[in-house]
Length: 293
Image 1 (cartoon, rainbow, N blue to C red):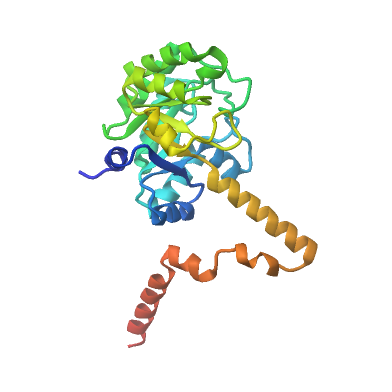
Image 2 (spheres, rainbow, N blue to C red; image 1 turned 45 degrees about the vertical axis):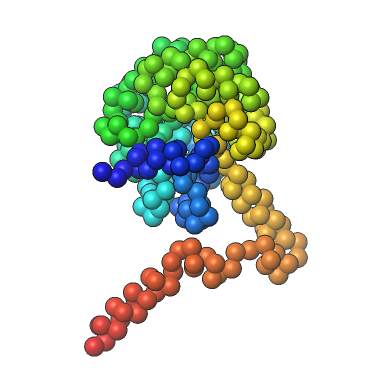
Protein backbone atom coordinates (compact mmCIF):
# COMPACT_ATOMS: atom_id res chain seq x y z
CA UNK A 1 0.00 0.00 0.00
CA UNK A 2 1.33 3.41 -1.00
CA UNK A 3 1.49 5.84 1.91
CA UNK A 4 3.24 9.19 2.46
CA UNK A 5 5.56 7.49 4.94
CA UNK A 6 6.55 4.81 2.44
CA UNK A 7 7.23 7.48 -0.19
CA UNK A 8 9.44 9.35 2.25
CA UNK A 9 11.44 6.24 3.13
CA UNK A 10 11.76 5.34 -0.55
CA UNK A 11 13.04 8.83 -1.32
CA UNK A 12 15.74 8.30 1.31
CA UNK A 13 16.95 5.30 -0.67
CA UNK A 14 16.93 7.14 -3.99
CA UNK A 15 18.93 10.20 -2.99
CA UNK A 16 21.84 10.50 -0.56
CA UNK A 17 21.60 12.90 1.12
CA UNK A 18 17.92 13.49 0.43
CA UNK A 19 17.36 17.19 -0.17
CA UNK A 20 14.24 18.35 1.67
CA UNK A 21 13.09 21.92 1.03
CA UNK A 22 10.79 24.04 3.12
CA UNK A 23 7.43 25.02 1.67
CA UNK A 24 5.47 27.61 3.65
CA UNK A 25 2.43 27.22 1.41
CA UNK A 26 0.87 24.78 -1.02
CA UNK A 27 2.05 26.72 -4.07
CA UNK A 28 5.67 26.44 -3.00
CA UNK A 29 5.23 22.68 -2.59
CA UNK A 30 4.00 22.48 -6.19
CA UNK A 31 7.04 24.40 -7.39
CA UNK A 32 9.39 22.18 -5.37
CA UNK A 33 7.87 19.08 -6.95
CA UNK A 34 8.18 20.54 -10.48
CA UNK A 35 11.87 21.28 -9.90
CA UNK A 36 12.46 17.67 -8.94
CA UNK A 37 12.60 17.46 -5.16
CA UNK A 38 11.45 14.20 -3.63
CA UNK A 39 10.26 15.58 -0.29
CA UNK A 40 9.14 18.83 1.30
CA UNK A 41 9.13 20.29 4.80
CA UNK A 42 6.74 22.35 6.89
CA UNK A 43 8.70 24.39 9.42
CA UNK A 44 7.26 25.39 12.77
CA UNK A 45 9.06 28.69 12.40
CA UNK A 46 7.52 29.02 8.94
CA UNK A 47 4.01 28.43 10.29
CA UNK A 48 4.58 30.95 13.08
CA UNK A 49 6.08 33.67 10.90
CA UNK A 50 4.37 32.98 7.57
CA UNK A 51 0.86 32.02 8.64
CA UNK A 52 0.56 33.85 11.97
CA UNK A 53 3.05 36.71 11.81
CA UNK A 54 4.52 35.66 15.15
CA UNK A 55 7.96 34.51 16.38
CA UNK A 56 8.86 30.84 16.75
CA UNK A 57 8.54 30.72 20.54
CA UNK A 58 5.95 28.01 21.06
CA UNK A 59 3.07 30.37 20.30
CA UNK A 60 1.57 28.46 17.36
CA UNK A 61 -0.56 25.43 18.15
CA UNK A 62 -1.50 22.10 16.62
CA UNK A 63 -4.47 23.46 14.68
CA UNK A 64 -2.26 26.10 13.05
CA UNK A 65 0.12 23.40 11.83
CA UNK A 66 -2.67 21.06 10.69
CA UNK A 67 -4.24 23.79 8.57
CA UNK A 68 -1.00 24.27 6.64
CA UNK A 69 -0.37 20.51 6.33
CA UNK A 70 -3.79 19.96 4.78
CA UNK A 71 -3.37 22.81 2.33
CA UNK A 72 -0.13 21.26 1.09
CA UNK A 73 -1.11 17.59 1.06
CA UNK A 74 -4.45 18.33 -0.62
CA UNK A 75 -2.69 19.46 -3.80
CA UNK A 76 0.82 17.96 -3.68
CA UNK A 77 1.84 14.35 -3.16
CA UNK A 78 5.45 15.05 -2.19
CA UNK A 79 6.07 13.32 1.16
CA UNK A 80 5.94 16.03 3.81
CA UNK A 81 8.13 16.17 6.93
CA UNK A 82 6.47 18.27 9.63
CA UNK A 83 7.89 20.17 12.59
CA UNK A 84 5.82 19.11 15.61
CA UNK A 85 7.80 21.24 18.07
CA UNK A 86 7.59 19.65 21.54
CA UNK A 87 4.36 17.78 20.78
CA UNK A 88 1.91 20.59 21.57
CA UNK A 89 1.28 19.64 25.18
CA UNK A 90 2.96 18.50 28.36
CA UNK A 91 1.65 14.95 28.55
CA UNK A 92 2.04 11.76 26.55
CA UNK A 93 -1.64 12.07 25.67
CA UNK A 94 -0.96 15.41 23.95
CA UNK A 95 1.93 13.92 21.98
CA UNK A 96 -0.22 10.96 20.94
CA UNK A 97 -3.02 13.26 19.77
CA UNK A 98 -0.54 15.38 17.84
CA UNK A 99 0.94 12.32 16.13
CA UNK A 100 -2.42 10.92 15.07
CA UNK A 101 -3.61 14.30 13.78
CA UNK A 102 -0.46 15.03 11.75
CA UNK A 103 -0.49 11.56 10.18
CA UNK A 104 -4.21 11.82 9.41
CA UNK A 105 -3.65 15.19 7.71
CA UNK A 106 -1.42 13.45 5.17
CA UNK A 107 2.12 14.06 6.42
CA UNK A 108 4.84 11.44 5.91
CA UNK A 109 6.92 12.14 9.00
CA UNK A 110 7.27 14.48 11.94
CA UNK A 111 10.00 15.51 14.32
CA UNK A 112 9.74 16.06 18.07
CA UNK A 113 12.31 18.03 20.02
CA UNK A 114 13.67 17.80 23.55
CA UNK A 115 13.19 21.43 24.54
CA UNK A 116 10.78 22.50 27.27
CA UNK A 117 7.30 23.67 26.25
CA UNK A 118 8.35 27.33 26.19
CA UNK A 119 10.75 26.54 23.37
CA UNK A 120 13.07 28.77 21.38
CA UNK A 121 14.48 28.71 17.87
CA UNK A 122 17.14 26.02 17.69
CA UNK A 123 19.80 28.56 16.66
CA UNK A 124 19.13 31.01 19.51
CA UNK A 125 20.71 31.07 22.97
CA UNK A 126 18.90 30.23 26.19
CA UNK A 127 17.39 26.88 25.16
CA UNK A 128 16.28 24.62 28.02
CA UNK A 129 15.80 20.89 27.67
CA UNK A 130 13.56 18.36 29.36
CA UNK A 131 15.15 15.31 30.93
CA UNK A 132 16.27 12.45 28.75
CA UNK A 133 13.52 10.27 30.20
CA UNK A 134 10.81 12.82 29.47
CA UNK A 135 11.91 13.05 25.84
CA UNK A 136 12.00 9.26 25.59
CA UNK A 137 8.43 9.22 26.89
CA UNK A 138 7.43 11.70 24.15
CA UNK A 139 8.96 9.44 21.51
CA UNK A 140 7.32 6.29 22.89
CA UNK A 141 3.94 8.04 22.95
CA UNK A 142 4.37 9.10 19.32
CA UNK A 143 5.47 5.65 18.16
CA UNK A 144 2.55 3.98 19.94
CA UNK A 145 0.03 6.43 18.47
CA UNK A 146 1.10 6.65 14.83
CA UNK A 147 -0.94 3.66 13.59
CA UNK A 148 0.85 3.41 10.25
CA UNK A 149 4.37 2.11 10.92
CA UNK A 150 5.67 3.78 7.77
CA UNK A 151 4.92 7.21 9.29
CA UNK A 152 8.36 8.26 10.48
CA UNK A 153 9.07 9.62 13.95
CA UNK A 154 12.21 11.76 14.02
CA UNK A 155 13.83 12.86 17.29
CA UNK A 156 15.38 16.30 17.38
CA UNK A 157 17.92 17.11 20.08
CA UNK A 158 19.08 20.60 20.99
CA UNK A 159 21.61 19.25 23.50
CA UNK A 160 24.80 20.34 21.74
CA UNK A 161 24.49 24.05 22.52
CA UNK A 162 23.94 23.71 26.26
CA UNK A 163 25.21 20.27 27.24
CA UNK A 164 27.91 19.47 24.68
CA UNK A 165 28.53 16.75 22.13
CA UNK A 166 28.82 13.84 24.56
CA UNK A 167 25.40 14.61 26.00
CA UNK A 168 23.98 14.96 22.49
CA UNK A 169 25.39 11.53 21.65
CA UNK A 170 23.96 9.96 24.81
CA UNK A 171 20.57 11.55 24.31
CA UNK A 172 20.51 10.54 20.65
CA UNK A 173 21.20 6.90 21.48
CA UNK A 174 18.47 6.90 24.11
CA UNK A 175 15.98 8.44 21.68
CA UNK A 176 16.67 5.81 19.06
CA UNK A 177 16.33 3.08 21.69
CA UNK A 178 12.95 4.63 22.59
CA UNK A 179 11.77 4.09 19.00
CA UNK A 180 12.84 7.12 16.94
CA UNK A 181 13.30 6.19 13.28
CA UNK A 182 15.57 9.12 12.46
CA UNK A 183 17.66 11.76 14.23
CA UNK A 184 17.73 15.56 13.91
CA UNK A 185 20.69 17.00 15.84
CA UNK A 186 20.20 20.77 15.90
CA UNK A 187 22.79 23.55 15.54
CA UNK A 188 25.72 21.26 14.67
CA UNK A 189 28.88 23.26 14.00
CA UNK A 190 31.21 20.89 12.13
CA UNK A 191 31.13 17.82 9.93
CA UNK A 192 32.98 15.61 12.41
CA UNK A 193 30.04 15.91 14.80
CA UNK A 194 27.63 14.66 12.15
CA UNK A 195 29.98 11.77 11.44
CA UNK A 196 30.13 10.75 15.10
CA UNK A 197 26.36 10.96 15.48
CA UNK A 198 25.68 8.97 12.31
CA UNK A 199 28.10 6.25 13.36
CA UNK A 200 26.64 6.11 16.87
CA UNK A 201 22.91 5.89 16.16
CA UNK A 202 22.78 3.81 12.92
CA UNK A 203 19.59 5.57 11.77
CA UNK A 204 19.22 8.34 9.17
CA UNK A 205 20.62 11.64 10.44
CA UNK A 206 19.32 15.02 9.28
CA UNK A 207 21.45 18.13 8.83
CA UNK A 208 19.57 21.41 9.19
CA UNK A 209 21.27 23.69 6.65
CA UNK A 210 19.45 26.85 7.64
CA UNK A 211 20.84 30.26 6.75
CA UNK A 212 22.26 32.70 9.30
CA UNK A 213 22.42 30.08 12.06
CA UNK A 214 25.03 28.08 13.92
CA UNK A 215 25.51 25.43 11.21
CA UNK A 216 27.78 26.25 8.25
CA UNK A 217 26.21 25.96 4.82
CA UNK A 218 27.76 22.59 4.04
CA UNK A 219 27.53 21.27 0.49
CA UNK A 220 25.85 18.00 -0.38
CA UNK A 221 29.21 16.37 -0.99
CA UNK A 222 30.46 17.46 2.43
CA UNK A 223 27.34 16.12 4.13
CA UNK A 224 27.58 12.87 2.18
CA UNK A 225 31.15 12.40 3.37
CA UNK A 226 29.95 12.75 6.97
CA UNK A 227 27.23 10.11 6.63
CA UNK A 228 24.32 12.56 6.65
CA UNK A 229 21.13 11.08 5.16
CA UNK A 230 18.92 14.19 4.89
CA UNK A 231 19.85 17.77 4.00
CA UNK A 232 17.13 20.15 5.18
CA UNK A 233 16.67 23.70 3.87
CA UNK A 234 13.74 24.80 6.04
CA UNK A 235 13.22 28.46 5.16
CA UNK A 236 15.49 29.25 2.22
CA UNK A 237 12.68 30.06 -0.21
CA UNK A 238 10.73 31.88 2.52
CA UNK A 239 13.64 34.20 3.26
CA UNK A 240 14.09 34.96 -0.44
CA UNK A 241 10.35 35.52 -0.85
CA UNK A 242 10.30 37.95 2.06
CA UNK A 243 13.23 39.95 0.70
CA UNK A 244 11.59 40.11 -2.73
CA UNK A 245 8.25 41.21 -1.28
CA UNK A 246 9.93 43.96 0.75
CA UNK A 247 11.74 45.23 -2.36
CA UNK A 248 8.44 45.44 -4.25
CA UNK A 249 6.66 47.25 -1.41
CA UNK A 250 9.50 49.75 -1.03
CA UNK A 251 9.77 50.37 -4.77
CA UNK A 252 6.04 50.97 -5.17
CA UNK A 253 6.04 53.35 -2.24
CA UNK A 254 9.10 55.30 -3.41
CA UNK A 255 8.48 55.44 -7.16
CA UNK A 256 4.73 54.98 -7.54
CA UNK A 257 5.13 52.16 -10.08
CA UNK A 258 6.26 48.54 -10.14
CA UNK A 259 7.72 48.73 -13.66
CA UNK A 260 11.35 48.35 -12.53
CA UNK A 261 10.47 45.18 -10.60
CA UNK A 262 8.87 43.28 -13.49
CA UNK A 263 12.04 41.34 -14.41
CA UNK A 264 12.07 39.90 -10.88
CA UNK A 265 8.44 38.78 -10.95
CA UNK A 266 6.90 35.48 -11.97
CA UNK A 267 4.64 36.12 -14.96
CA UNK A 268 0.94 35.42 -15.02
CA UNK A 269 1.48 32.55 -17.46
CA UNK A 270 4.16 31.03 -15.25
CA UNK A 271 1.83 31.21 -12.27
CA UNK A 272 -0.94 29.57 -14.29
CA UNK A 273 1.44 26.86 -15.49
CA UNK A 274 2.29 25.67 -11.97
CA UNK A 275 -1.37 25.75 -10.97
CA UNK A 276 -2.66 23.95 -14.06
CA UNK A 277 -4.97 26.93 -14.47
CA UNK A 278 -5.88 26.32 -18.10
CA UNK A 279 -7.07 22.76 -17.44
CA UNK A 280 -9.50 24.14 -14.85
CA UNK A 281 -10.68 26.73 -17.34
CA UNK A 282 -11.23 24.07 -20.01
CA UNK A 283 -13.44 22.12 -17.63
CA UNK A 284 -15.50 25.23 -17.04
CA UNK A 285 -15.84 25.75 -20.81
CA UNK A 286 -16.98 22.13 -21.23
CA UNK A 287 -19.52 22.51 -18.43
CA UNK A 288 -20.97 25.72 -19.86
CA UNK A 289 -21.04 24.15 -23.31
CA UNK A 290 -23.13 21.24 -22.05
CA UNK A 291 -25.47 23.55 -20.17
CA UNK A 292 -26.11 25.63 -23.31
CA UNK A 293 -27.00 22.53 -25.34
